[in-house]
Image (cartoon, rainbow, N blue to C red; front, top):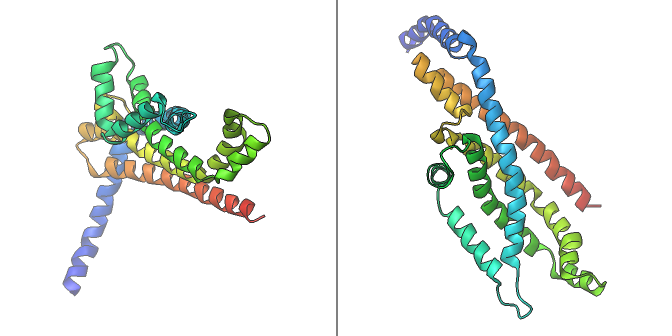
Length: 244
């Protein structure tokens, strides 16, 4: 046992030196940290725009899915939204990205634009289900109260139901934002130089796999922890407001 620990102690300095050298080559040499910074910026940009459009279209598809005729039957919009949500949620995001870029969009289309559209479409389906569940969780008496005050169905939904639903589903939307951040890692399949693609690029240039990949994982983990921290604060704030 003592021999085992002695061997580790003797190997430790050389191992630490190897780690330092790999870190220097992976991040410092040839200003590769700039490439990682650009990849991180691309990842955040894809996530931001996909989240914005995903929320907008997600709310729209949620309202479409909930739409009913005066006789209570589903409308054409409801059927279309249900099919859309089922198809998008039932297929991988990377497959949607490949189909959109290689089979749907013209060859001259921007890779970043294609990625934003693909991730927006994917996110909107999940957001639609989150919003639908949030709306249906609002007590039906709220709708009846709005209608008794003379508000139309649209006004009741806009000014009474949706604000209450958004408050309830806000933590779930933030979680969807976190999931979306990690899903953008597949953007490299169409050549977008996001954070994951940059790490793969550095590995191919330095032939060092451990440090670039671990460094990329640490960056993703750090961003997720920051978002989770603010999500925790948001949830505590919402609980405080509910207890008043």
